[in-house]
Length: 342
Image 1 (cartoon, helix red, strand yellow):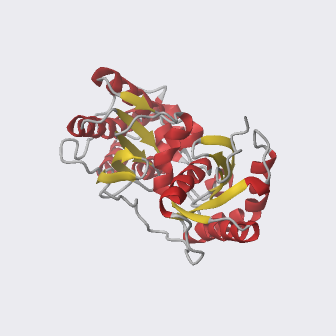
Image 2 (cartoon, helix red, strand yellow; image 1 turned 90 degrees about the vertical axis):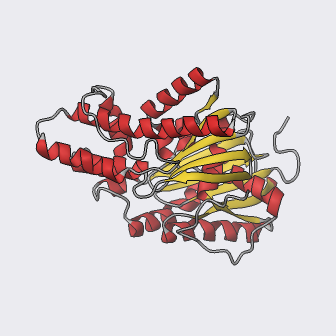
Image 3 (cartoon, rainbow, N blue to C red; image 1 turned 135 degrees about the horizontal axis):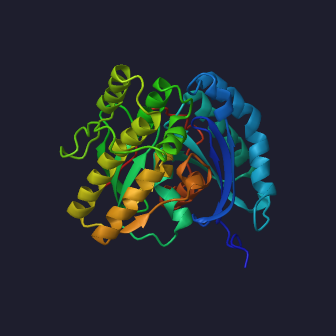
């Protein structure tokens, strides 16, 4: 049976919030027909981080081919006539990058005479795990960790959630990037530190776990400084050991707080989301804690952890059912937060 046989089922998602140009076709909010991501990592690596103007120009060049590829690789095959809505990330993110995706989505929605749906990027990440596990049981505690955000979210239902904790300074992914830059490991920092850590002793250096037992918020700025200070005083230290010890400190705080939150709120499982959710040690510790506490561990595939348009299409489908179409006057909002609503 064609999964898009029902009218109103198929959503084209577009993601351009940072340095990934992505398009996807998702049916019914959870069935991925195609998901295309064009990464700009090589463009930004020489600068040690994302350059907004470079990212925006690359999105302009890649957006049309990426959307075309999403249709070409859809399985089962679908055409434009079957698209019921077009969803795009409207924020948070880089304003120039956001406007490329939002403008493309609005244009297609107008030409195809279908609804346009503006999607919050963080809310999209909350839907990523459902694309791998549509039967994911709620309520759950979601650890949303990326280069720009670190949040602890109590998710009661698809669109019912609230932020119970967040970083007061650096995001976890930001700390990975800054530590990797100081160590001369290149950009992006998360994957290279993860790989290096596999050969190191994670107990070699006892780095601080800031705010470990203090409420639900996080702080990683001090940890980043501690790593840099340690390296300045121990220039011959093993890079593998330092990377492993740093990664252990980050994962330890994230998982410990998520575990306590799960117990306090009586949820059924722990879920990871965001780019840092691809970190192997964070995934391993989450599985261990869930097994010990009798919780379900919901770990999205690595393709669904990083920025992608499938999660945007999924969130867009659910928002369309609940709120209807977005107005075409909606623009990009680079600083929008997660719209918790209970």
